[in-house]
Amino acid sequence: RKSHYSCIHKALPSVCKLRGKTGKSNSRSFHNTAREYSRGTVCLAVAKEDTLGDQSESQKGESFTDVLIIGGTGRIGTAAAIHLLQVESNLKRPVRVILAGRNRAQGIAAVEEVLGEVCSGPKEQERWKARVIFKQLDFKNPSQLTDALQGVQGVIHTAGPYLGEEPLILRRAIEEGVPAYVDVADPLEYLDASIGLAPAAAGFGAR
Image 1 (cartoon, helix red, strand yellow):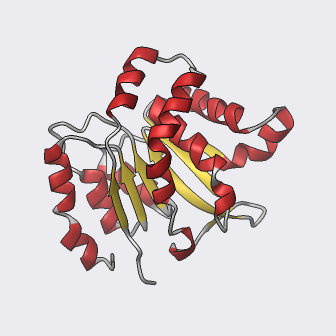
Image 2: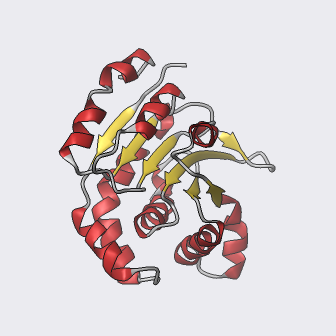
């Protein structure tokens, strides 16, 4: 299977500032702003969905495109998940978002928040609950990260800050053959290090 690996970076400084102001409260205005900033990034993450690898299947046999959102319990992560589910009509297969984070209580709350935004009521939420799931993850733990990347067709990394960090998630995603990757990094050093991984990605079949 030929890999179609997309390495895309987009800075979201205004969203990061809003995150600091909104705290843990559910702010519809924040989500609207975050979606505007993330719209291009999230769409690019799934733009080549038809070229991606084997899809995951539910117990009923329904085929999904699994997207792992690291930092998925935060404001930017949930905004990305909501937008991704809202634009999935443009895709060949429905999306399943995996909200990854360390705190299980925050993860459960994030799942409820996303379902509340994309569903019109309890009955629809019941139908969609298999499409929005939480995965407990410390992405700095190599074995946990490797496990989380298994079988996913896309990764959206929103768990900053990125300053002074190495693009470890990008490197591991390349090694595990994940077809699409997006992050919201803005430090130039981080971006330069990520661009430097292009030869490694090419070695795994990227183009």
